[in-house]
Image 1 (tube, rainbow, N blue to C red):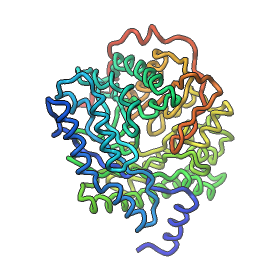
Image 2: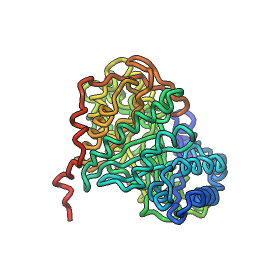
Image 3: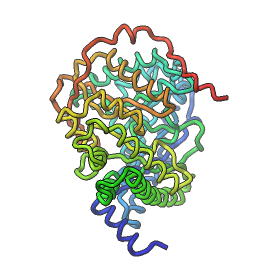
Image 4: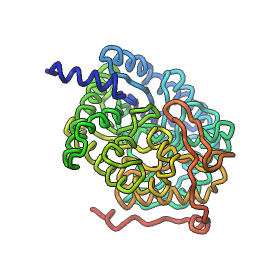
Length: 452
């Protein structure tokens, strides 16, 4: 039984500290939708998504009302589309994205992820077709998200895919130039992508998953920030213990919602992702948590150490609360989506190089970063390669979601709106990486990948 004090604490976490369920994501396998005819395949895709997720949004809204827990997003992830579309006799994969988008609109979800390909060791013809279709697919759809996995600890880094993704990010920005390159906000490039991530834009339904699954992503930077105010000036082991206890409470709430949604939708419960996912709202910032530990501004010396403590303590608290913790689970640092990160970037303290260092110890990587529209495809590819190398060597998930905003220069601002927030355009090194990227081939896997 919960005590009255615990109930009141939870109510306060929701009302005053921005605690919410960030997403209920239904993963759906589309492997049985493969068909030589692209028209028949698209119909099968639309029909299956709508059949499986028909009641997803209503169920989320019902749980929200009954339990009083805000559920911000309801989302769908699908089998990487390159695996499904590859069976069809067509070179144009845009219609598959359109079918996904129509299904998302019919079901009423916020996003649908899985216009994806896994190319960490090589590319099939289907993978290439999908990547070539990304700029147009993200321009003509509203809710479709795309992800490409270009590296892994076991396979190394596919530098041909990295080069292609640098070009694809650039093309996507230009194709959506009327919206400041908004298509790039729905495109992420991974190393060591996970198969059960409920967060966009990187969610897809892994081939090792069941036919359908319910994954839940919780969020609570504001709750952690509030908890740390009780240990001002105390040693770091006390800080870590406080974060662990707070993460435990947040995860228990997520597990409650996940199991309830699973039961009502008659769909197996997958995982709870306990990532601290910030929003542009004041009081819901990962950067402000780091500053509460004693940093004057996020990005100054000590930031990476503070983030390492936070990320580790969040994971430890979560695994105490649930045996089904998965996804990414830790602390996200998306610049445009975090009020404190935005402020630190505008002040000049938080730089691209410091963000890269922070990605060594956070949940994902360089996320929602706007850069000048003049940035070359080779520079973008080099940034992707750097981030993939961090993931490969450290056996962790890393990613790049970067927006080369057409017509924008350093100091300008890109308005994404909603949870995607506002991105100050950040400076990059201007020296060329073109000859490095032109080499292609594959960066071999590190020695510690040989674990068998």
